[in-house]
Length: 363
Image (cartoon, rainbow, N blue to C red):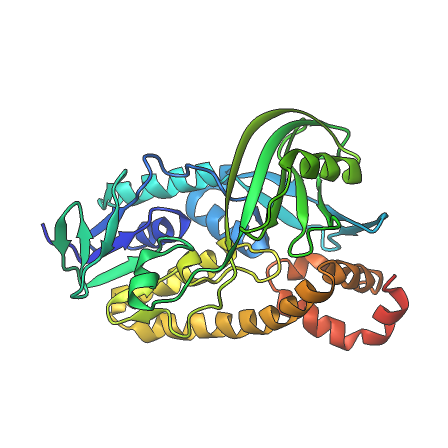
């Protein structure tokens, strides 16, 4: 059977595009046996991303809303809240998100092969279960270790390893998530995110060559935040890509999206926003047979990400908590942080505009 499009990777990136395209004969190939599993994402998203997926899939994919964030830095506590009346951030139920995207994709008549691997063919095709397919287009949404990116572009993946546990928890407010900056882990922050009234998601990220005792880190996060954690409900992890975004999001008939690009936010590592931002234009490029539609949308995002990335690299060398301190100073200057959850470049611009008051309020 011939396919117009083969999507390699049935995570949120590949399934979002396939769930939008209606008039194409599509095959989605996913190496895992169940959509949404294994888990690996924290699931915090901003207003833009939440609105996009709620409009596509319904409101039950959002299982918590956060009024604000509490930053813990050097023994001090900074509380940042939305000023707009809207949540500062939302928690998206990732397994449910991908299950619904899977159901929508199947409902459109597309085919999904689970527990199946795919790899590029030397002639702009894709090998699936020893079959060489020659679709018009291929979407490589196969994550930060993308085999398509490695074989076609040759880039070596760089990433942090995220480690997360879901705990029974006590002594916290459900509408605030916590961010900590532990000494000895300068490359990233740590997080404690309430999922329910007595459930919290706790995590950290480190370079893959660094070795820590997870028990000590999780205990330190609980101690710093003041949250009592009990029994472990489940554990999981994932990779946070550090590579620069590709100069061009397609090569010949192969499009890249998601962590294969990658287009995650440089400071937080969040990648769902970029999927929501890019997927409609990629679908339209395929429908209209015009890759430049996707290129134009991607280029605008890439410019933002590269500027943010330069600043973040400096923070990683000096002090990764600097942006949180600056955000607190901006908040004291009446800036609404909910506007910038997904638009970190906007925070950089506001920092420049309000530099005198930031210097006063920084500490």
